[in-house]
Amino acid sequence: MSNKEIKSFDAIVIGSGQAGTPLVFKLASHGQKVAFIEKEHFGGTCLNVGCTPTKTYVASARRMWEAKHGEELGIEIPAGAKANLQKIKARKDALIKKSVDGIAQGVEKNDNIDFFKGEARFEGRNIVAVNHELLTADEIYINVGGSAFIPDGYQDIPYLTNESILDLEELPEHLLVIGGSYIGLEFGQMFSRLGSKVTIIEQGDSIIAREDEETSKTIQHMLEEEGVDFRLGAECVAAKNNGLDGIAAQIRCSREGEVDIKGSHLLLAVGRRPNTTKLQLEKTGVRTDDKGYIEVNDRLETNVKGIFALGDCNGKGAFTHTAYNDYEIIAENKFEGKDRKVSDRITTYGLYVDPPLGRVGITEKEARQKGLDVLIGHRPFSRIARAKEKGETKGYMSVVVSAKSKKILGATVLGVGGDEIISGIVNIMYADSSYEVIRDSVQAHPTVSELIPTVLETMKKL
Image (cartoon, rainbow, N blue to C red):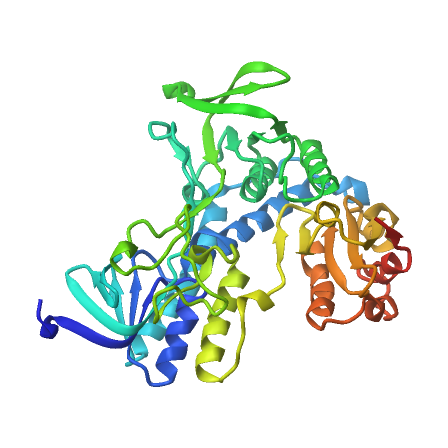
C-alpha cells in the first residue's frame, strides 16, 4: 500500500482503560493528534465490568445483610427483605452509562482526538490496522487490559465470567464458583447475601493462597458463617451440562474422593489473561512472556522503541490504581521531565468482601520465606472498641516492620474499614519514614485507626 492510504498521527492509543483514556486526553491537551482505538466500550474493565459494577453489587448485598442483622443492635426489622436483581442491575447500568457517556462526549468534542471503534492489530512496527483503515504513529501505547481465563474443558458448558454474571436479571438458585481467590470470593459472598446458595470450589488447600494463613482462614470462616460452602483441595475439577437440571461440577478431593456438586449456574474465577493474542505483536518484534504479557522496562517502553504497554497487559499490576499510575509515569516523564519508574510503586490493594481486606507491601508469610529480620505487630478487631461499638468485630490488623531500618515493610487490615484504613500505612511507606512516626501520632477517638499506634507499640520479633 502507498503512504497515501495510511493515516498519520502523533500517537496511537489502543484501549480505553484507566491508563489509555487519561493518556489520550493528556496527549491531545499538548496539541498532539491522537488516534484512539476501542473495540467495545469506553472505560475498560474497571468502569464496565470491574470495580464500578461489582462495588454497586457489594453495596446492595450489604443492605441485605443489614436487613437481616438488626436484632444484634436492638433494631427489630420485619422479615421479608428480598433482593431484586433487575433493580440492582439497573442501578449499576445507570452508574456506568453516566461515566461512559462523559468519556464519549469528551472525545467527541476534542478536535485532536480521532476515535476508531474496532479491534486493533499491528501490520508493522508502527502501523496499526482497525476495521479497513491503516494508521501510523511514531509512538504507540497499548492498553488492552485482560479478561477471564477459561481453562480447557469448559467450552461446551454454559459458564459465567466476571463480565457475564453482571448481566443476570434473576438470582442463581445455586451458584457454583470455580476458584477461591479474589474475584470468586467477592461474587460468592455478594450472591450469597442476595439470596443464592453458593459453593466455592478451590484446587488449593486454602483460599487466596498468596495471603497469610490467618487472612485466608478468617475470610473463609466469615463466609462460612454466612452460609457459603467451601470445597478445598479439589485436585481435579471438571463440569458437565445437565440440561434443564443445570450444571454439575465434578471434583476429586483427597478427603472426599470423587464428588458431583449440582448447581444452577457456574462462575469461572480461576485467573486472568492479557488481551494480547489478537494484536499480531509478532509483526512488531515486541516481546511477550510465556503467558502473553507484554514485556516492558521501568518506564513502560517495550523492547521496540516508541511502543509502550500500560495496564493489565504488561503484567506489572492487575489493578485500576496501577494502570492509572502507568499513565502518570508516561505522562509526567514525557511532559514534565520527571523520571518516574514502575519500581517506585509499592504494591497495595483491597479485597472487597465484607468486612474488607486492605493490603500493602509484604505479608508475614513472605517475610518468613525471605528470612527477613522483622518485627510483627498484631491485634484482633475483637479488641478494638470502635469495632465492638459497630458490632463488627471480625478480622485483625498486623504490621511487618524491618528490625534494622524501622521502616514498615507491609501491613494487613482485615476488618471494618480495612480498605480505607490501609492508606494511612501506605502514606508512611511512600514517605519512607520510620514506623515510629505513626506509632507516636495522635489519632482521633473512637476510630479503628487509633489502634494502629497501639499495634506498633507492642511488636514482637518474628
